[in-house]
Structures are given as structure tokens and as C-alpha cells.
Image (cartoon, rainbow, N blue to C red; front, side, top):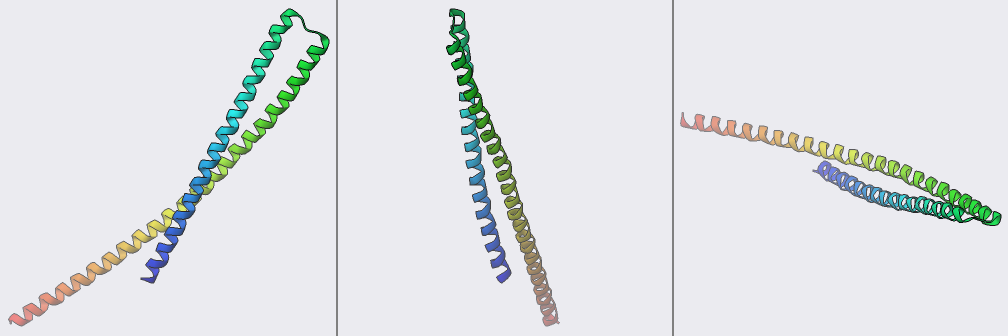
Length: 146
């Protein structure tokens, strides 16, 4: 009985760890989606800014205006590169959190399997005991009738 209690405690603990790992995985996925949205917005803004500049080039731009455009694009590209690194880090975090969740889930499932085996062994033992008692009862009945 103490073994079942200890195993039940392990199962509860493993289930709790699995739930926490799943929550962290969900948070990592949401954070990655947010970083990807920010990257997409930066890329879209860069495209729009470059298109506006191309339009203004047709009307003529001063050398200072052209230089300002280049400087701004460089800063925008640096921001895009930085955001891409953040996205990459977020994706790595998802991989790490998914691996952790899978590890916790495997542990929980192994405890469940062990509990199932123990339960089946206990049922088998109880069935053998019942069969033995029934055999003894039948033998006594048979001897009593003689």
C-alpha cells in the first residue's frame, strides 16, 4: 500500500511538472509569435519606406535627402537584424521548452505504465487468492458431503 502511495505521489508530481512545462511551452510559442509579428512589421515598414523613396526619386531628391534615406535604411536594417536574432532566440526557446515538456511527459507516462502494471499484478494476485479460496471451499463442501 505504501508503494502505491509513493507511486501516486510521483505521478502527481510528474503531472504537475508536465503541466508547468506545457505552460512554459505555450508562453514561448506566444512570445515567438509576437517577435515574428514585430519583425514582419519592420519588414513591411522598410518596404513601404523604400517604395515612398523610389516615388520621391522620380520628383528629384537632394544629396542630403538621399543620404538621410540611406542612413535611415541602415538603421532600419540594423533593427531588422536585431529583431531577427530575437526571433531566432525565441524559436530556440520553443525547441528547448518542447524538449523539456516531452521529457516530463515521458516520465509521467512511465509512472502511469508502472502504476498500471502494479495494478494488474495486484489484480492477478487477488484473482489467484479468490481462486484458491474457492477451491478450498469446494474441497470442504465435497468432504463435508461424504
